[in-house]
Amino acid sequence: MARPTTGTGYSGIHVQLDGLPSHHLPLLLAAYQYKFGRNVEAMCRHLIDDVAVGWGELGTDLLDGAPPTLVAALTGGEQWPSRTLDHLITPDGFPPVRMSVTAYTADVQDMQWGYVLHNHGVEVISLLNEDIGPVVDWDTDPLTVFNDHPAAWSSLDPAPTIRLSRSTPPPSAPAAAPAKVGTPRPAARR
Image 1 (cartoon, helix red, strand yellow):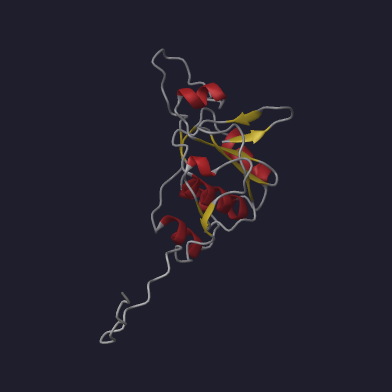
Image 2 (spheres, rainbow, N blue to C red; image 1 turned 90 degrees about the vertical axis):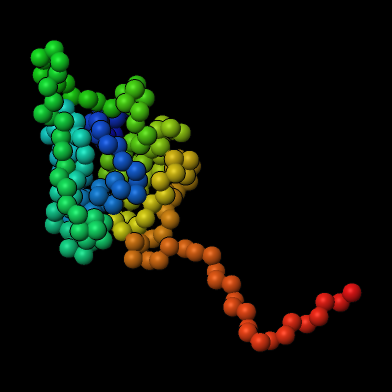
């Protein structure tokens, strides 16, 4: 998770369970819209600046203030807390050091996804394919279902959605028309 900085870099923090877009984007969108009152700076302070080491996992506490129906749709009724890595004890006895995200740490930590918090939305980077990615607007419905295939997240394309809402049935192939019972078929010509 990172926020853009001036110049070419990002100020970021490591999330051990870096998460698929179908999981992280709904949490981040709902957190921005409800918990942080559409204030990206407050969100960045909480997720990036106020953490000493990094995050183990992002939890449902990011949904505080969201409507109960939205929380239930996103979590299936389950609750789990966000966990920081601030409690780590190093083998050499020194205090743990903040785990900043760089191309090197992303590779070494086998990270597959990066999320950059911009003023206009969250950039989703498939770290296996590119160094930049499409931006999902902060006004996007948190119930949107996003594609988790890394190759779908090209910086040249819009963010890939599977369907616009979790309440919308998934797309399926049109059903074949049922055969009429008792209706003779025309004979084949020879």
